[in-house]
Image (tube, rainbow, N blue to C red):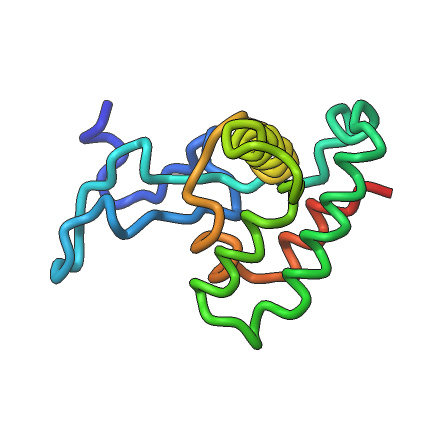
Length: 142
């Protein structure tokens, strides 16, 4: 029962060591707050090998470009980073809808590599703020 667990720290089997909470889903100014489930993101513990082996060469090339961008993110503002992130999959001669489709596909690859899901937090602020070393491990596609 819940009362029997009072004062004990109970480990949940679904919580990972790398949990990120989107503070936009919280009420600021409080010590304790309720976080909506859709505002909590769990990075994978290890690279998503099952997904990595299915990556196409173009997807791998885009991930390498992302890793290069992440390596220089400390020199960029969030807006510069966002613009650069969205530019990675774009083709200069493609129409707007085609570029949006390529961006969505690229972001889904990133979500799979980081979270094992097809969606997640807004990528630009998440990647700009989160510890680069953990992201590097999960983006290691070689």
